[in-house]
Length: 141
Picture 1: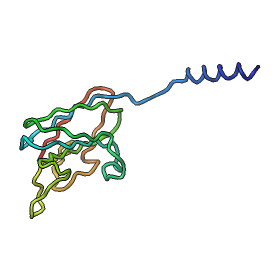
Picture 2 (picture 1 turned 90 degrees about the vertical axis):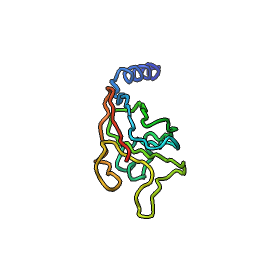
Picture 3 (picture 1 turned 180 degrees about the vertical axis):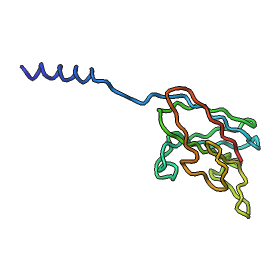
Picture 4 (picture 1 turned 60 degrees about the horizontal axis):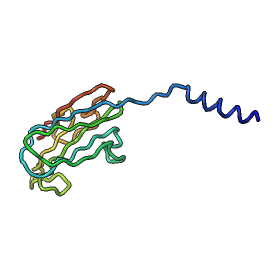
C-alpha cells in the first residue's frame, strides 16, 4: 500500500522539476547573386565541426527550386551555433562542378561570406541562433 502512494509522489515531484530546453529561433537565410534561373539550391544548416566535415548529418538539408536572383528561406532552429553552406546546382547532378583549371562553374557560398579561396572552415562560417528571430545573407560566388 505504501508503494502505491510513493509512485504518484515521485511522478508529481518529477513534473514539478524545472526542465530547460533550448528554445527555437527563426533563422531567415537570404541567398543573393544567383546567376542563372535554372537548377536548384542545395542548402545545408550544420550544427557542429563534425557535421561540417561530413561526419554527422546536417541539422537541415533542403533542396529549393531556383526562382530569380535571390531566395529567402526560413528555418526554426534550437538555440545554438550553426553554419550554412549553399550550392547552386545548375545542372542538378548533386555536386559542385569545376572547369578544367579547377575553378567552380556553379555558385556556392557560406554563412558569414568568408573571403577565402577554398571551402570555408566551420569556425569561419559559424554564427549563433538564439530564441529571437535572426537573419543572415549568403552571397553566392
